[in-house]
Image (cartoon, rainbow, N blue to C red; front, side, top):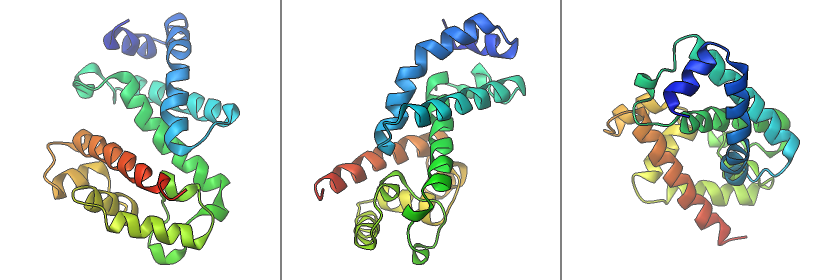
Length: 184
């Protein structure tokens, strides 16, 4: 099915097509969200998946997600973005003891920080981010330490739009994770 057909199905609450979407993309979502967050617990992933699909449905029904607004972005890519945010919220709520120390100047924390619970490890992650080459260094600092949204980051860093900033952040997180794996 096309993006337009899925959007129409969500808009009209076509249960059969929504169920098809739900079953078709579930495992891909688990992989896309579970891997970067190092989450393999099926129940956690299922909860985030369910909440993400419901949120997508609400946005479509409210007219905030349309084929035109998605541009060249797929519905699944949009859903992954929702899932990333919900997973970060979930981890903040359920792993309070893994949050970075207050001198990091933010409440939000990236995928890498959540998985390490000792101060030395957090210090290493902070130092790695601050020593990353541009544009990754500045983008990650803006997003995690300055808590800027993607629209603001796009403006500050001269990206064409918020989606470009999101794409670059994803690439930067992959680079960060690759560097951190060397120290495991």
